[in-house]
Image 1 (cartoon, rainbow, N blue to C red):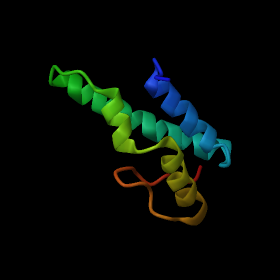
Image 2: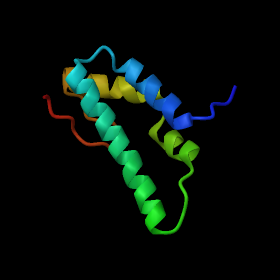
Image 3: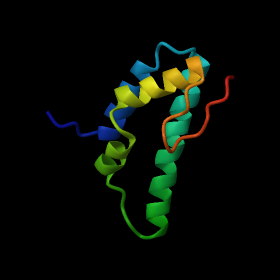
Image 4: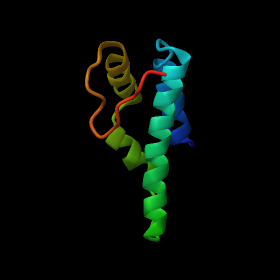
Amino acid sequence: MTSRDPLGTYMRTLASRLGQLDKADAEEVMREIEGHIRDVVEQAQARGKTTDIHALLQGFGPPEALAAQYVAHIRTGAPPPAGFGVIQRV
């Protein structure tokens, strides 16, 4: 089954996997990911291009894996996922 809203599906899955974090930490991760997506879309628009959301999300990897990396980063101090910033404890 193909989702008509791959971005929404990805973000919902990511959010559900971040549920083991404090709410503030999970929200910060979601803002980080949303910011990256927004930046890519805006850069493409500035060049007169459209963004292939499927390719963008594939670059992030599976939402379950991305969430696991952020959970490890926040809970144990592991490095953040490659290409993403450090999440400061709020």
